[in-house]
Image 1 (spheres, rainbow, N blue to C red):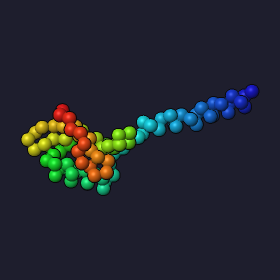
Image 2: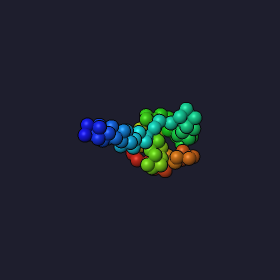
Image 3: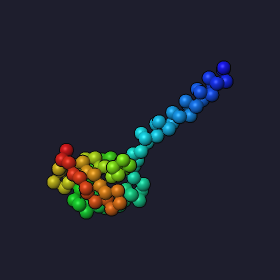
Image 4: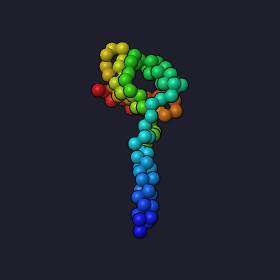
Length: 91
């Protein structure tokens, strides 16, 4: 009986990381991606921004607090391939 109980407990422990995996879906850009995103945002008139992350479920890049030269702030969604702005919300 103890062996069966131990096997069930071990199987439950092994499955725990599988349940946690979706929480790791978002990621920061690589150096190459960050450079390309920065170039695109600068060309679109943004001078600074906070966090950039890739949302695999979108799929899209999310940019928090992108600030324009005139001081306006937006949250942006970017295309996962060419980094074009696909959604812009005023902060």
